[in-house]
Length: 329
Image 1 (cartoon, rainbow, N blue to C red):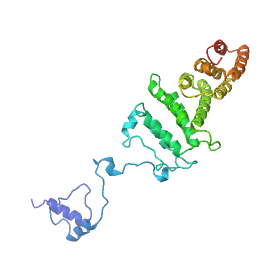
Image 2 (tube, rainbow, N blue to C red):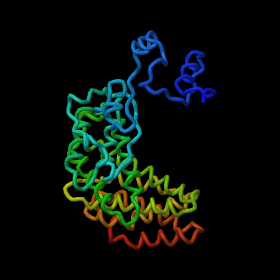
Image 3 (tube, rainbow, N blue to C red):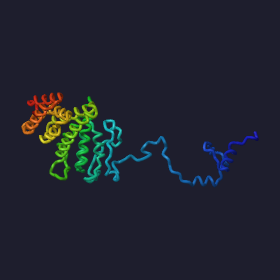
Image 4 (cartoon, rainbow, N blue to C red):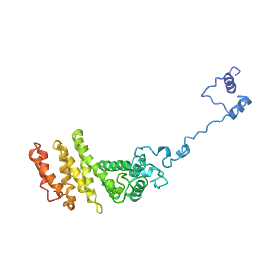
């Protein structure tokens, strides 16, 4: 009908008035909708290219290659670990070479080391441990080594019950670190090997955790902290079983016992008794070297057993003292 306006005429009127509807599309094959000058203006405008929605991630941004120079001084959060994490990373396990790492003593990036710990499995154990050793050889950073040792202990105490595989891997890693870690880690004593520095750190961190777990057992109500305590003692015992490495020296053991001999802390005494009755017998071969320490410990524990009013502590102490022929006592 004549009263109705064609779609093309409506579009033309809308364009002329400058009020084009946002939801109305103009057919490209209908002439007369825009002037030739308008077509020229549109064609000369440079619009930024957009990435299609269905394009792969590599089309949107390049895959990260290592750590940029601007990030080398940052402390990075560890990536989620486990075997699944290793399969999801396209780059796999990074092989660290001297040309890849240029980090000064004071500002090394721990992110690479934690990533390697996340990647650690039974299948790739040799490769990952080799890369960790190479990293510290190139970057002898004592602060990062201490944080790495802390992470190993935390991971060991957090392994769920029934998952002994990951637990055993961490024990093996500690043995490798003590025997093979090189580099001048300790600036004050450069003659001391990196493996011995790692062992000292491991002993100190275990001592701190033994004391801290006793306090958290009271605060947290017992279950979680109690499980961590058992895991830590099991970790210490498994390390004592390792052949071909002197993991726990008499001085390290003496620091543990001295720290836990606290008259006012029942849970610390409970931790001490568990430590002496479980990993204790594993150190029988060190009994001669520990003789002077054993005498002092035994005297202090006997005195405390006589004066304590706490039945639980008294029973624990008597149990330890009665096992003198099994291990440290």
